[in-house]
Length: 247
Image 1 (cartoon, rainbow, N blue to C red):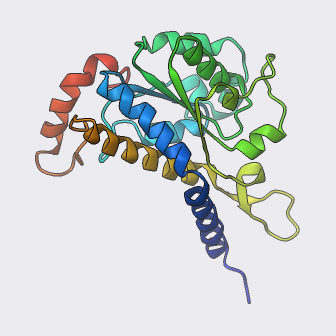
Image 2: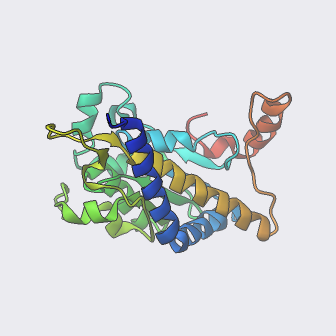
């Protein structure tokens, strides 16, 4: 019988998602509390990821059914969407993090979410370091086991997780692939995008519940393709427009 690759992928991802549910509840709740506190106190959540981690950052920005006060820190030279090969090297260059942090114009009440599956490249490490140095709470979404198995590419020897107040561990596989084809060295079926989005959306939903419990109506985007959706969202945007860089 010929193996079905898609079923192998489904099974592998299901196992990782199950592991996330079994291991990450405490971390999800701690991270959600950080986000809730920031928003109740008038702050925003700044989110950054380089390369494919930027896809996760983009997924939660200006997103129907999720929180409004999320600022995606976007630099196309590092995002992988433009000149992808070059961006893979750009995120390893030291000195970029302080520039990106300063561009956020972050306020003391803001929190940061930094995303990097390996957590070993300069840009996400420095973003977390700068946020931490300026007194912000930092949430890291990463693969802890893989990150600890690899040397940092930063001259400090630090990894992203070294600057985190809370780590959301995506429980990913070695090399970020879950399927092997016999006779091939390289695996396939990337996991970190699916698991990262799953983990972070769960955390943000929990944050919304905690915002409500603190006596504030959670600022949540409506689906813009519903009648009245964009008008509803515009009222939300009027509140947070000055704080978000990419409207």
